[in-house]
Length: 214
Image 1 (spheres, rainbow, N blue to C red):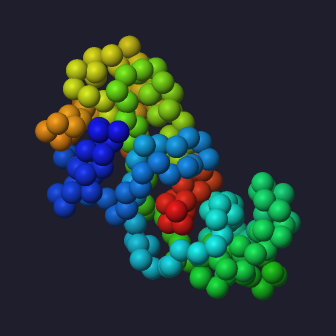
Image 2: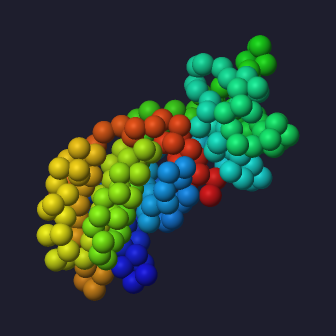
């Protein structure tokens, strides 16, 4: 808890994270479809502040938006078949999403994501903090790659040596590694990891809208 609280202070500091910089939005323990990262952050979010998040869609809103595209319409039946929610819940959420501009309806009665919601240039980061258990940390970081464009495991100084045996897996999954000392709040990149688009676009969109609606 001490490490997480200190890391959050540094993440949200006016100067941003050392060697990384500032983020448009930083969230702690947001539930994603595959995992629950300690911190998730969004950068280059041109949609910041454009649309007010719906107030009552709950998890249904992010689920719907993760299924919709900007140009390829989806029918109500499609949304029901590919969602874990009832038709009634989806209809209710769609009503509010239409009112707020998150969703638009086509002439045929199908649905597309609102034109303002283009996150193609945004970059989603996930940070996994671990005091020990590197095997578990790498596994969780692999899960984060389903929705995050960059994933960094953050460990106390001295723990980074325990990750050498996972070099191959971390290279394959483009996972970064950093140390963080909660006492002096010093953050140091050990391996940056390469930025690559997340492996599941639906998981990525779901995570982004969980951040917006959470």
